[in-house]
Length: 291
Image (cartoon, rainbow, N blue to C red; front, side):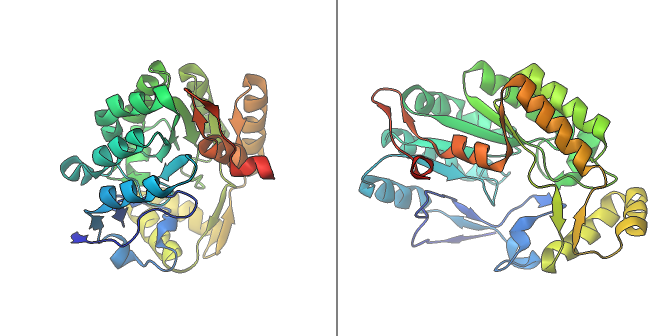
């Protein structure tokens, strides 16, 4: 862990991250793709000047929109407890009347519920919560260092109770760990119970090249040794892996979302996350309106 003075923090698409790298250890970690490797990805850079840079960048924007956090690095990992960069950042987002989309596995987000409610009153807040399973034991090993499944569910319920929109990310789907249709059905039933607005199951493909693959196999073997033996017999060292149950899981999700009228898939969830709304002035055009 070390501090840096960043030069920029906001991408042209309004992606924002006050951290580079992670203290959490996800078994299938796409953040390990180039230009990252395992060593530098877990050596976290803390951009202490990120809020100031964010304020400057938002002040120059000609139109307001959604600020997107958590697409690679969870902004509410444990070091945020001490750093509080997210709280400063949300204050700035609120002051400039932007909306915010956050992806997180961590209940630390509830520390900032007052700011999220404030933003949501004037514009829009979307919280995307990965929920790969209902099992605390499995979720705690899929992502070491993140809040377990039952705690995430409590957070989801609290957010929805406060009229904040929540979507569920049902990935990664890993053979012999959480790819059983009955397990997925249990998650879907819970999603219906809590009232989430969408599900993104990803493409249910594991791409295991380079550092991603090395880390996946090492972590899988250490955390799920019995399941890993079954995995190796079935898939060996394949670079691209799709669960045998993928088609059945996809049908379960499709039927569920159609029956319950909620958003499904990456494109629909992306549209939900990036469509800005100002509740005091109406809505503004987003990039999807031009497609």
